Amino acid sequence: MPDSSLPLVAPKRLPFPRWFRPRVCRLHFPRGCPLRFYVWPALLLLLAGAPNWPTYASPSTSAPAPAPATVPAPAASTSAKASSTSALTPLKAHSAPAASTPPRVTPPGSSAVGLGAIAQGASGLREPFWQALWPQGAPGAKGSAPSDQPALLVFPLGNLPVTSPSVADSVSEVHTPVAKLHRPGRPGFLICPGGAYGMLAWEKEGVQVARWLNDRGVFAAVLRYRLGPVYRHPAPYLDGQRGMRWLRAHAHEYGLDPHRIGMVGFSAGGHLTATVATHADSGLSAPLDFVDRQSCRPDLQVLIYPVISMDPSLTHAASRINLLGRNPAPEALAFLSAEKNAQAGDPPAFIIHARTDPIVSFANSEAYYNALAHARVPVEFHAYAQGGHAFGLGLGLSPKPRIQNLETHSPLAATGNSASLRSSAPPMAASHSTASQMADSRTAQAPAADSDSRMIEHAEAPDQWPQAFQAWLASRGWMSPGS
Image 1 (cartoon, rainbow, N blue to C red):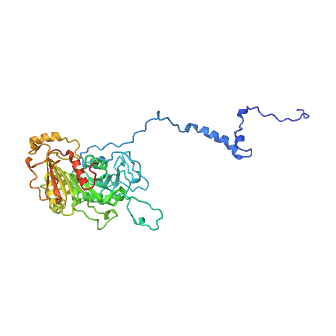
Image 2: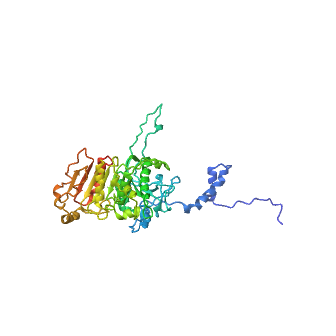
Image 3: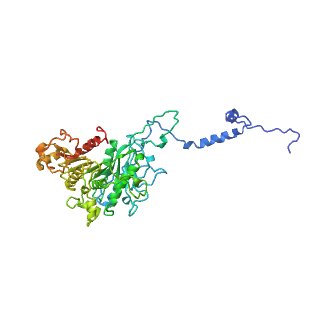
């Protein structure tokens, strides 16, 4: 039993060292402040999360950023089905679309992007994107695959959309004057690749041409139209019309001048271009939407080694079979022969064709030139003595080997690298002129001011035809000469 007479003494506190005493709270908070009880738990939480804190490396030791993912370039295809699906992928992968983006056609290996999500690179150009011509489904489509849904691969420019005056710009009681700049829209082209209506030469006659135009400040969109033998006339024709209507309906969105939208067509795509140009309208009488109310008339038609006629004596047999079958109706043959439908008011034309074309007869372009000249439609026709078919932009064609071939096989060899420039509204009766009648195209005189058509004979290969095309566009105010 403890002695109860001894006084009770409270035990002393443990002798903790002075530095261990948590006096931080007493230094920063009054004794009665409740916040001082949360300081130490907060410090413990911060220490517990230290392993997850981000680390920053110095610029000299930081790893390089990974390269953007790319989609392999489309490989050449020998079948119509493979060409209309796997060969139509854009060159680069795109980001995911915004929530408000309308539905777009997306081929395998790419992603759809809206105008608001287009990435703009250091060159000032934005990445291409796909746009369905009928977002709710094409009329007469037999499926939902990319080959069943016509679409545009749009190559936009880096400029801002065009601003145009509206009713809201008319105001009164102006207190602070403000100058508002209304820039004119840019010219643009709808590009139709060739392929005998059974495939599409997508890279050579589509993407390369669009990038060439973009580099010179011109908007471009490549048309993926429906192909035979699955789709016959009028499906490709309707796709071409819809492509023109779509660009004109969305001219403000794309920064386009709606009165400067042309069509470029190669081979069978040239036939589609000429067909749309000779059967243009100002809008459908029973439109399904706002796009159908627009005109499908191209303001310019550019035809590169084109199929023009469905006449058996002129046409390209494979294109005719894929488009019309083996027993076409006479009415369809007449409707799809552009040389029989040319008339005054058709769009001005620029034609390129080689006399040695083994696939599409040179007589196609010759007949169309005659028809346009007879109708007093402005036309410039460049006839090359060599070059063959499917040369695209002429890349890889060397003038010297072609001229050596001319010395052996062509009556034009005596003049060397020469050309003949002439103005002729009547038909080309003297298209096969002799060398003594030819002059250098660089020194030849321009046609008379009252003449609307001219033909230029070239003895070299068509590797310089884009420069001639650029000069023609510059003469019409569509492109600067030095761009």
